[in-house]
Image (cartoon, rainbow, N blue to C red; front, side, top):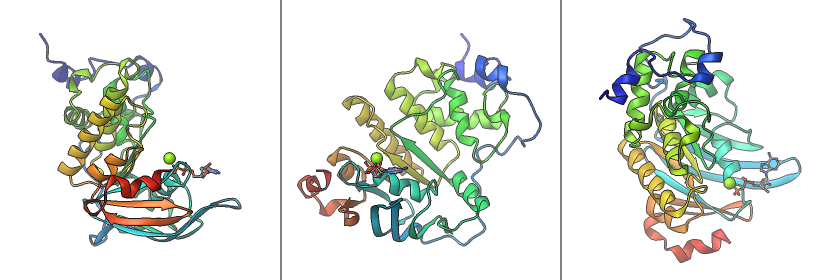
Length: 290
Ligand SMILES: Nc1ncnc2c1ncn2[C@@H]1O[C@H](COP(=O)(O)OP(=O)(O)O)[C@@H](O)[C@H]1O
Ligand SMILES: [Mg+2]
């Protein structure tokens, strides 16, 4: 019997048909540094996230105003609020995916509200997003999908498919899959996975570049309750082991209290709550979910 992991680490024995057709081999990326995190030159910030007076309007419609909070390195913060209060919008502002209307957001020591695109690129290498939609490429293998987590730090077609990726990158992707317990499925097509398996692959893809900050927007909302609980437990085990700072949302009141060090809440277009999880009960939070 061959070992499936070694087989994948050997040069291109398993190929993605879709990837093999469309990916040219080019020498435009350097092998050997696949999993190395990008190091910023700045002094270490005290807080990984500092949000000050953040206001977001869509056109004339105000979503939230004057939101301020800070996250220490390694902290996990649950963001709660009823549907439509602006949780996903706030998370997208944190990642610099949409502009703030006013106020400032500083992430990993860089102010992103007026960052140049080069700064945003550096930050994207050190941050990751896990969301309700797993957004895997269905026709590609599990391993290729995990490799896509390195595309932020290594642009180039070689990182699109396991067939062409440098060995260190394939190793990093296998390591990430081992962390989520799915190395044995590395060569399976992504569209042959269960919902829980695909979310674990999405988590491996988010972890492979060794981010310092992860944003998880309803990471288990598309899963059945049992698979959702497993995914939450696994996700938080891994982020705690890796010292990753996390901001997350979940529909389940218990998740905020079980997995967050702190809970912040949006209501009425404002930050209505910022408290330690230990100081709160489920009934304190229920009003914020209605
Ligand atoms: N790109 C957009 N353009 C206009 N309105 C938007 C956009 N994205 C979200 N919204 C609106 O902003 C509000 C907050 O949405 P969202 O952040 O998704 O809330 P939540 O994640 O708390 O459910 C909603 O009313 C939504 O319809
Ligand atoms: Mg949302």
